[in-house]
Length: 196
Image (tube, rainbow, N blue to C red):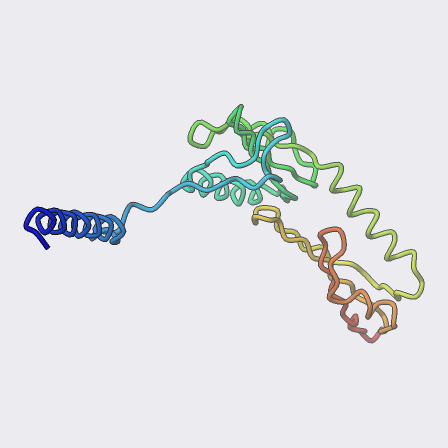
């Protein structure tokens, strides 16, 4: 090989080695861990209609609003669910208990990190709960003694449980045990009988 070709071959080899070194350096993980992304995507069910889901929402504000939800429940309001109106910075809290309008006004006068609070009576939820209750009570094969509702609307997603107490176990009430229907988890228990 003559010296001109040899020089070109050496320059080409050196260039390729430099390119490979640069690629290796670029693909190395950083020596320090990067700052974590402190935002979350608000689930679609929490975004008020006519808004696009997927807006970033900081975990700090979300945590404050969830804490406020728990505080609201401490005011004898049972929360069935909540939503976030990102455009108007409003925390929409749905409750299925009617309460003193003065209590509602006091809650709605507060703000959480410049977010307003709006309490809404959840008629849809109440209707759904009443329909489930009447279907179970009106079925003689269920042998229902009573229903206890367990609702945690501050959870994300909300947790709905119906504890069904029966006078005796039947195939019908046992089929219901452990199932989830329309967001409700059903658990069937034999009711304790007490002497007269």
